Image 1 (tube, rainbow, N blue to C red):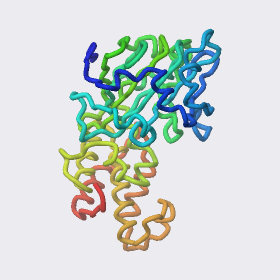
Image 2 (cartoon, one colour; image 1 turned 45 degrees about the horizontal axis):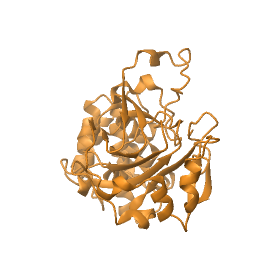
Image 3 (spheres, rainbow, N blue to C red; image 1 turned 120 degrees about the vertical axis):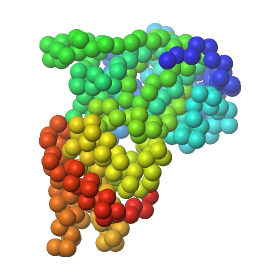
Length: 347
């Protein structure tokens, strides 16, 4: 959904490259540098994921407006509250954004003819265009497998392996039949992208944008990408991280809310995801009960005695779980945890 010329940005509407350069004049700023074709490709094997260099704030506008364009640059996802005190006092939140659920507000500035790879985010996103134009190509979350996501637990699971600028239909044949939407946002426009919608973004001009990310209701996130995300090792190691990423208020708190989510995963044909959630609950409960808050999962399992056999079986089932693989244990694990009612410190 696009709201054209919203007029809801207040002083943010005046954040031109020159104004940003003036406000950042005395600081060093990390700028990502695109590949020669203008794509900011994510490298999961590098520490930062992207290629960065440091620039003086006072030079930003001149660097981004340089003609001819010799390289493509991006001021990438800069959290305004945490990292940009010079601008935080000018921020306003459009009324369509639930301010209480906000995770982050970010500043972006990009060179013309630069682009992101095709990817999705696990948060709702209101994208506000301030200067220049950006083109979005959007894909429904239900087409998840047709967009060839990266492998789990690699830092690239939310990126497509497809290059939309040069699509290889022989290597990725399902891509030929996907449905997509195109949108071009101009200064003053707001674009709402629900969580897990795939998007490919390209700047048509020197572009300045702000985006607002907030947590989705976990019940609204039950799409293939979310269910696959439940298999991430992170969720087994720290199941409480789910409460930071998603709004569970409609499901309750603590283990009761997580078990409700496990039942929904089971109902959506993902018993392995349900088993993973049960394993995460068990790991968190054991850390508290055994006084081992820093123990990783293998160390925790090694510390279990015979009296913890049910917990060991639960964690073993969670470790075995894989997307699309049948699991006959999930329903029993949920039932057992409902009886034992483990207490979690957070959530």
